[in-house]
Length: 331
Image 1 (cartoon, rainbow, N blue to C red):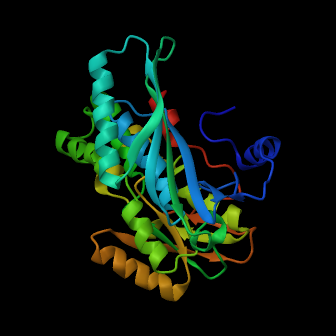
Image 2 (image 1 turned 135 degrees about the horizontal axis):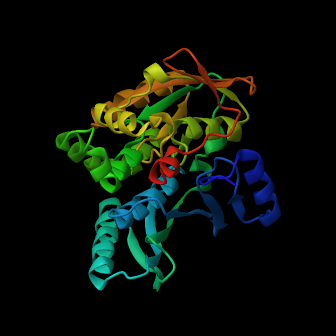
């Protein structure tokens, strides 16, 4: 199988084998859903676990923010973290200290605490793998799901496409990129990592009536939009010309032959909201210093799921969307 997420049909089959519904599970595993929600004494406990496998120097930083982003899409604030660190063979204690400092710093930023986990050196790994589980809670009637998009809702993207992917590539492939991209552009691109959190974005959108929130990770904006549409049982039409892409991302992607709309995009938040709320959400996000743009709309016909490209072609979002990061890193 190809590297990255399982294709939608394979994922559905896999989940059907491992998940057994229970009365105390408000939301179990499903295509496009970012978290699990458990009913505990009348409270919705929100849990999400995510691995960091494609990042190098900033792996600890990313591990916290990526996991917390998914909890935030529920409308809950991330509170507690459980971190499993599998350090690569030959690692040094100084490297472990660096990762620990990254994890603590990111946790402090989102107001969460590391409460447990596991650390080991795994000799056959060629890079560190960090799996972070984030936990939060909210009222059951306030949960927001990826599957909440409705026909007529507008699709909103915060910040810009491929922030995480741009930062990873500019950091891990800096020597390779230096032949085509200026030092200044690479420096700015690497700093996109500082914008990975969508906790603030999600709070604003949740408070203003968003129907669905989703964190676009592997497969980028294209796969994220696809997942919301599939989870919600609706169609979607999205326009590339309306999706914000920063010049640094364009430069890095052009140098590596990568598609920024299929590049891992933590740092952006996908929002589905009714027209009136969408306009207010965009205004409030911008008022809080968070860029936001309406990029398309959800429609009733689930057979219509397309991303209209600048060159006039259409990317069929009813077909699997492959992640660009793995291809580029292995090239």
